[in-house]
Structures are given as C-alpha cells and as structure tokens.
Amino acid sequence: MSAADETVNTSAVPVILKRKLQAEVIGPIYAEMVAELGEEKASTILDTAIRKAAIAEGQAFAASAPGGKPTMASFIKLFELWTKGGALEIDVLEATDSTFNFDVTRCRYAETYRQMGLGKIGHLLSCNRDAGFCEGYNPDMVLDRQHTIMGGAPRCTFRYSRKPA
Image (tube, rainbow, N blue to C red):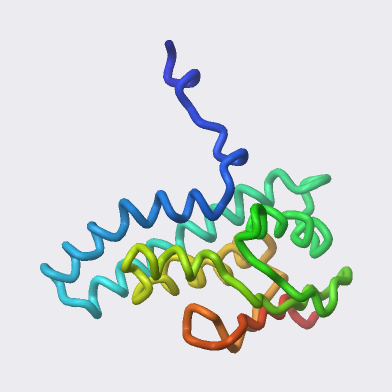
C-alpha cells in the first residue's frame, strides 16, 4: 500500500469532527506550552499558528473555486461545510454577490470545546480561523464580527463584505 493509498479524503469529514480531533491533539500541546512559556506566550503561538493554517486553508479552497475565481457566491456555498450536521444554527440576514451577513444562534464548536475542558482557548481554535480563512480565500473579502458565543455573547455576528474599491 502506497502513502497515496493511505491519505484520507478530509473533505468528507465534517468540519466539527475535524476541529474536535485537532483539539484533542492541540489541547495537551497547549498545556505543555503554558507550563513552559506561560499562558500569554502559549496563546500568542497558538493564535499565530491557527491563523496561518486558516489562511493556507482559504488559499487551498480558493484554488478550487469555480473558474478559479473565489467569489462571495462561492464562499456562501462553501459555508455549508461549517454548518454540516447542525454544527452551527444560523439566521441568514443577507446573502448577495457582495455581502453575507448572518448570526449564529447555536455553536456546537463552542459546546464541544467546553465539554473537552478547552473553552478557555476555543476562540483560538475556531473563531480565530474565520478572518484568516477569508483573507486566504479572497483578499477582497473582509469579516466584521463584533460578538461570539465563544466569548460569552448570546450569538455570533458574522458580517462578510467586499473591501471598498
């Protein structure tokens, strides 16, 4: 069996499951970094690493966008990956060629991290990815999010738009 035969089609794995599996590995590593470096430095390292990974993931998805051009419409379609299996319950407020505005009313990512005892770093493991993914997917898109469930708000406020020309 070759290495290629052993690769897993990660696009078939629900994102919520990917994040849980990642957290099972990252949690103990983060705890060791805190013990060695302190919480502030460990959080900074984790923040930087997750952001870089999210940008790279956004770039990979952009490369496979229809016609090779990542648009708001293709981004909206992609978003289904993060809601799959009830991972997020959302109220879509606006979905156009230039904006995608919605509120998350239930976040199973936050629930999962809290159940795992990782609620304190859940924002680094998940919320931290959103703007970075957007940056990698289409640098002309921007995310404005003022509130998150992970941060204690009753809902997450996602406001994606195109940068002004």
